[in-house]
Every structure is written in C-alpha cells, then in structure tokens.
Length: 191
Length: 112
View 1 (spheres, rainbow over the protein chains, first blue to last red):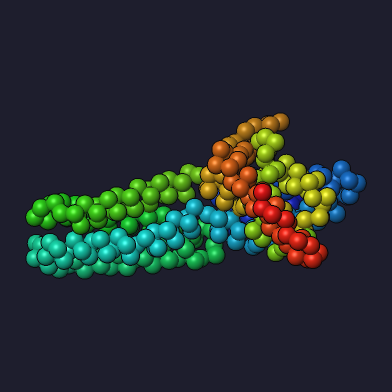
View 2 (tube, chains in turn purple, yellow):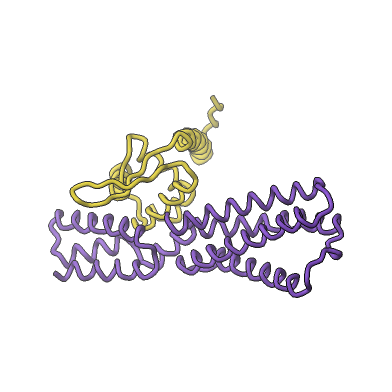
C-alpha cells in the first residue's frame, strides 16, 4: 500500500527523535488525517501525501515538542534559579568559615568539577534542538544538582557550628531544587 | 490565515475547542478547522506540542483512553484552564474592539 509506506516513513522520522508515547499520539492523528482524505475521494498515494503535507515537517514538529518539553523548562528554571541558590550557599560558606572545614582538597576539586558539569548539562538541555539530547542532559543535570545540593545540606548540617539563618535559607532553596529536579526526572522518564 | 499570524492566539483557540468537553488531538484539530471554516493554515502536527505545553501549564489535563481498540490521549479543561479561557476571551474582545475602532476611524467603545 503506497500511501501507508509514505506515512510509515513519516512516523519513522518522528520515532527516531521522539518518545514512543508521543509518537503513538501523533500516529493516531496522522492516521485520521489520512482517512479523512481517503473519505474525500483521494487515492491512497494522494491521501497519504496530503496527510503528510498537512501534518508538517518532522523537524518542525520535533522542534516544537523540544521547546515545550518538561526537560527544557526544568533546565531553564534550574539555570535561572542557580545563582540565587549559589548566593545562599556562598553566604553560608563565608559565615561558617568553610575554608576551615576538614574537607580534603581533592573533594573540594571534585565538587567544583561536578558543579561545572551540572551547569553544562543543564545548558545543553536548555538549548539543544534534539528532544532526546535535551531530555538526557536534563536528567543527568537534575541528578547532578540533586547530589550537589544534598552534599551541601549534609556538610552544612554536620560541619557548620550552629544553625544560622543563611543555613536555613540555603537548605530550603536546595531542598526545593532537589524536589523539583527529582520530579522532573520522573516526568521526563515516565511521562 | 498563516501560522505566524496565529502566534499568541493558538492557546486560546485550543482552550476554546475543549470548552464543550474532552476531546483527543485529532478531534481538537477537526473542531478548530470547523470553527474557523478551514482558514487556519498551520501544520497540524504542531498542535500536539501546543497541547503538551498547555498540559504542563496545568490548563488542560491529558489522559489515555481506549476507543475501538486504539489508545488515544484525551484532553479536558482544568478549572485553571476555564479561568484562563475566560480571561483570554475578555482580553481578545477588548483588543479587537480597540483595533477595529482604530482601523475604521470610529470612537473606541468604553470599557464595560
């Protein structure tokens, strides 16, 4: 059936770049568009061509899904709120004289490298045109942020001499970011 | 009417098509086509990402259902979506009244 093969190719192009649950929804819409043209009297080939033309270029559809994806939105939110959370923690580090904490230099270096990696992953998720690349980068970036924020909360609770308002503020900010990141990972992975 | 002319209004149109009750993606596209006399010239595949965006904004709620042995994603307005639609409708009426008055050199109607 020539019409079906044209539609299958179109769906194949979408399947290569979008999650199965989205393609399933698109396939239903494309199939119904095709059937509408058949009912209007077009032949299979012409109906498939008309349906594919009406549906739009796969690249445009993928770009629209990427722009609307939870991964992209979460990455942009975490990037925008990052400096605020960083400022909270910087205040804590200065107020508690963090340079005197018994943390090895290698661990400090690893933390800094992980922070840079998290920012790079979130930036990739925020600006990449590929839906899959943006999703994968957002998952990795959110998990990275969750680990970093958890480490900071743990360190501040165990090493800071006493509870101070900057610590409380920073812990709240980090807890919100961890929760948001984990929820984003769940949403991206399981819809 | 081209896609770029629709920018900013597509969300309102999609919300309006769901005012009568839940619909799946193709039914929304079909309702939009009927409501506009087929004059909207936009790739229908791009309606689906717009629906996902509205769902993320919690203005509509999506759920899978099975009809004739086929899984379909159904969408319905949320209470926030109903409120958003009412607000967008009021904004559009005001905008249309002001622009129409200016284009036709008539006095602008007083806001109600």
